[in-house]
Each structure stands twice: as structure tokens, then as C-alpha cells.
Image 1: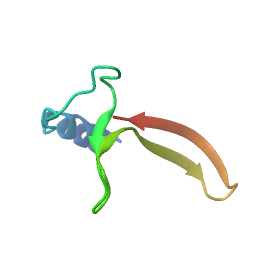
Image 2: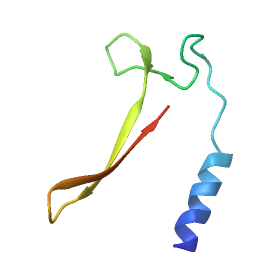
Image 3: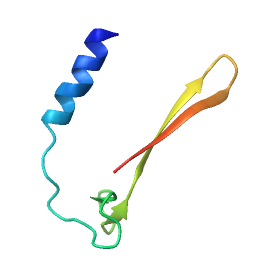
Length: 62
């Protein structure tokens, strides 16, 4: 668990400042898929109990 938490702390330090920032929603992130127009959005991460098939936690990241 300590190694996991240390890796999370390290990854936060390595993040670069965003090139664009939304004035309406600064927590969102500028993103685009190949061949598609870019837009501001969030990423959603799910923690799933695969044995029970239940979503245990949801976290949005910008």
C-alpha cells in the first residue's frame, strides 16, 4: 500500500500544466480523439467489484 501511495504522489508531481484552460469550468481538461474535434471534458474512473458486478466507487479526473 505504501508503494502504491508513493507512486500516486510521484505521478502528481510529474503532471504538466495544461495548455488550455476552460474559463467556465477550470476543472475540465482539453481532450480530443484522433480525427475528431477537441473539446473540454472529464475522464471517469470506476472501481468495480468484479465478483459481485457492482460499481464501488467513481472518481472524475480533469
